Length: 166
Ligand SMILES: NC(=O)c1ccc[n+]([C@@H]2O[C@H](COP(=O)([O-])OP(=O)(O)OC[C@H]3O[C@@H](n4cnc5c(N)ncnc54)[C@H](OP(=O)(O)O)[C@@H]3O)[C@@H](O)[C@H]2O)c1
Image 1 (cartoon, helix red, strand yellow):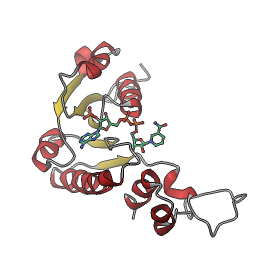
Image 2 (cartoon, rainbow, N blue to C red):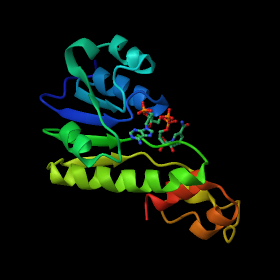
Image 3 (tube, rainbow, N blue to C red):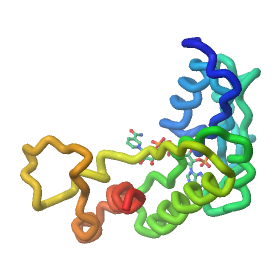
Image 4 (cartoon, helix red, strand yellow):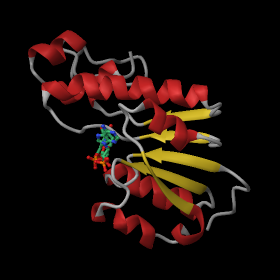
């Protein structure tokens, strides 16, 4: 452990997913108390989380769906920070509204519950889809994907990444 973070409770949405699992592992290693969310915490696809170092003492799993505001409020109660990672990772256009509504719900529920800091996991897709930019340009925080271009080219996964930051 790198030094305990006394009394800090943080929530990781989508804790059992690829990025979420690594995040939970690193937060436990750094001494945080971690509350992970999953739509079904009992599902065996989340069982690896219980085997992480520190999990027995400092990890709890809560049910939450990003479309269920009440479940988010419950999961964020008393948390100092929220890492929002849960998202339908898909190029299915039907899931675009779910991803965007879900992110709004998470931000609003965190604010409602007095969470001090929210960290949102985005993707390269939020910045790279812009036909008007020279592909040799180094992208930075001033670069954004063009939503219309993402839509025209049906790259809905990148559309979600960009729209969530609008
Ligand atoms: N993997 C990468 O290399 C990469 C790179 C850049 C950015 N990202 C971004 O990181 C985020 C997570 O990606 P990932 O690769 O970790 O995906 P993943 O393994 O598919 O995990 C996504 C998680 O989201 C949860 N989820 C999906 N729909 C949900 C809903 N309606 N309510 C609550 N939870 C829901 C799933 O949990 P349950 O099904 O258990 O509920 C799952 O644990 C995404 O925003 C992605 O764009 C990933």
